[in-house]
Amino acid sequence: MSAPAFPTRIFSGIQPSGGLTLGNYLGALKRFVEKQDEGIETIYCMVDMHAITVWQDPEKLRQQTREGAAAFIAAGIDPKRSILFNQSQVTAHVELGWIFNCIARMGWMSRMTQFKDKAGKNSENVSLGLFAYPSLMAADILAYKATHVPVGDDQKQHLELCRDIAIKFNNDYKVDFFPVVEPVIEGAATRVMSLRDGTKKMSKSDPSDQSRINLTDDADTIAKKIRKAKTDPEPLPDNLADLKDRPEAKNLVNIYAALAGHTAEQVIKDYAGAQFGTFKPALADLAVAKLEPITLEMNRLMQDTAEIDRILGEGAERADTIARPIVDQVYDIVGMIRSRRG
Ligand code: TYM
Image (cartoon, rainbow, N blue to C red; front, side):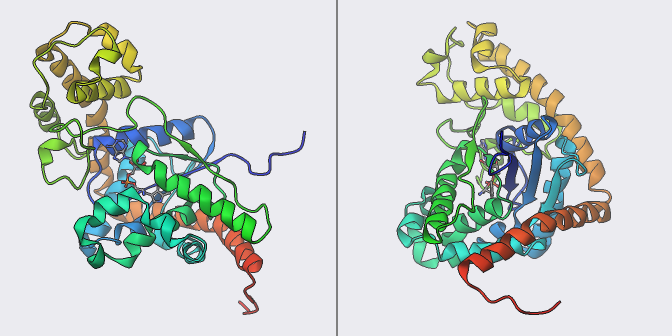
């Protein structure tokens, strides 16, 4: 059998635009660790260039990038087995991002719901970078010819665009150069919702801190936020279908399932008929048991920021070794003269 054209390689990224939440942990980090532990080649990135598409205070950006890297490691990413780095240290991303700006169409970008949500009524006044965001994201992935991208549900449309860019590049230049990536959106918590409103995504940018669990929250704060989470007065049903119009209850069941590594079906069977007075303390105990060790390890790692910077630098060098020749080939395909010495 001949080798597959594009060997399996995983890439994913997280923005250091704020502290990480339970949504980032369950929808992304936890699954990144699972992929690493399955022995697949895994490349993970703190996407600082994406973060500055909206204003970031420089000192906070540095702090959040290190904290994000600490969260990766505390959650189980081993910087020897995975490549872990920050995007701005590998220039191949922005170089390929520019080329993709010339491949992607204005119409494609205008349909991105995340852009529309972020820009709101203010689209004249947001940065050009925010509009071009998804083409840099495609460059992150394709600079490594990654084939699989684990993400939460909110990134689905961006990954469809990444597929469109790869297909158009291959067609325009009559090559079979880029893989058409597969989004990996799986598990019970692909969309963790706000603790205050079950119809809104849990987000680091929500003005209410009560709406989310931060990876920096201590055990007491986690337990309090879960106890105060919005719910309804009904007990839990014995099947998932009956949670259809109960977004807050459904969210807590999904969070429990993802934390426990069970399916939502299993959780609903175990807690059929239970009141939230019983279910919430059980969820709080589980959340603290799973998250507290990560928070403590993050705090320990953050004591030595020079070591975090060293790990990111080493990861960037390894990332560059893969991305550089791929982007050099792209220049060649596109028709750029590359005669500079050294
Ligand atoms: P970001 O930083 O918003 O989120 C990082 C990851 O966390 C997931 N996530 C969630 N999953 C479940 N429930 C939630 N409430 C929740 N909130 C966030 C996101 O889906 C994501 O997987 N554009 C990306 C960053 C990026 C990227 C990439 C991702 C840049 N380049 C290349 C993959 C590949 C973003 O803003 O993620």
